[in-house]
Amino acid sequence: MALENLESLDAVYDVTIAYGQTRLPNRRGLAPNMFEFCCGSPAAKTLSVHVKRYPAEQLHKNSRKELQDWIIQAYYEKDKLLDEFHKTGEFPDPVSVNEPAVSLFRTLPPT
Figure 1: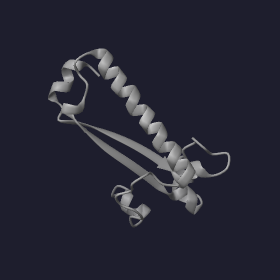
Figure 2: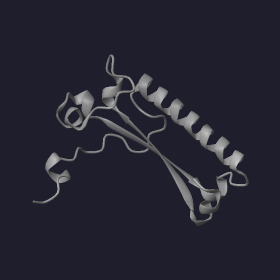
Figure 3: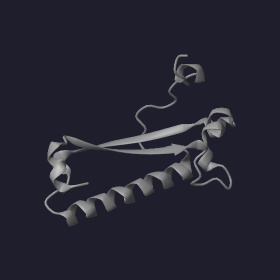
């Protein structure tokens, strides 16, 4: 990401996605493929999303080194989030839980 391009941003969104299947034995870190996700066991069909917004003012954009350090720290925090997910099955401090499932039919484009 070029430092000069950050001026046009009002925020950066950090999105972390975790699949329930990655908590099954021998599957840690292995995201399911589309077939496994749609047609697999109920544990394989769970999806957790963690979104964090960083306002532009919080971005360390005074130098390339500061921005690199900020990105490294953001990934360190993502690793901690995923560790927590693998231990407990959810991200810490959930805002919305157990949203209703969307049928596969509603996700397909019209023919």
